[in-house]
Figure 1 (cartoon, helix red, strand yellow):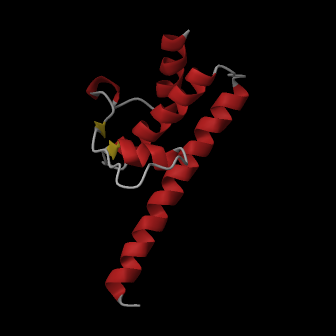
Figure 2 (spheres, rainbow, N blue to C red):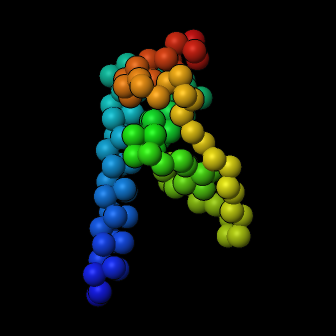
Amino acid sequence: MDLDNQLYLENIAERVNYYNQARKHGIRYIIENNIVENPLIINILLMTAVWSAHQREEILTDDEIQIFFGLATAQGDNSFNMIELHPEHQELTLNEILEMTVERYR
């Protein structure tokens, strides 16, 4: 394997690991706060992904969000809607984002 391919694969592995750790943080938050409402759980996990993307200076697409949630899309059904963290929330910590998500839901 040449160096370019190796670096590319290492980059993907780092990204996957980062988003997985963020997802685990969101799940811990849900469990620790006894959150049982399905729409709120989805919102928390979504905000975790969006916040994480902002930290990496990335913008997620609908397809990437579906990958984050482990959902499959129909082949050829590519979506390119961009999902970004609101500028007013970009300086908040992940826990602050999650608390705000819960407050707005309830």
